[in-house]
Image (cartoon, rainbow, N blue to C red):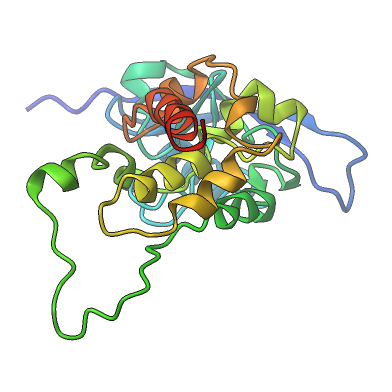
Length: 239
């Protein structure tokens, strides 16, 4: 049986350590012993383990579920654990997702992102006590918001948005997706409060329908469509 093909990857990483660097800089590394089915995350692991232990990045499940390792790979937002070398080749450039403060290298400060997420009340609001009963839904009612339940809060959509890059006050696509998930939930009673948040100047009207968010979503959520549905709901409920 033939040995698997091995690859040598030319890796460029945008590095920044606020303790020693005045500004970000690029580091180039040659990483050997990889296979076409390896992922960009595997390249980063080998770079850190065998070349430069100071390289910093986030990762947790490494299976596209937690969203921890969102970064810019060859110019596009992606999860490093999902991008195969067979897809991007042996010249790999990675940098931190844009629009959030860089803590170190590929690690960004997610606190502004989660503050926007919390602002849309991303939980079920229901005043009644169901007791020992379930709050039931029909399959059709559940299907109405099924797409936006897939969000893993990786921030890939929000940090791909040119509006967010220039206006950190913009609530952002991920928060709107989370609001959508509850706005169209037949069990929820918090829609009016969410629409108040989204109808502000920093809310949903900041969206310019660039579709960057939809293209960036690693879960395939129709983010732009969800944003448009929220806009239409504001019109139908407030006009």
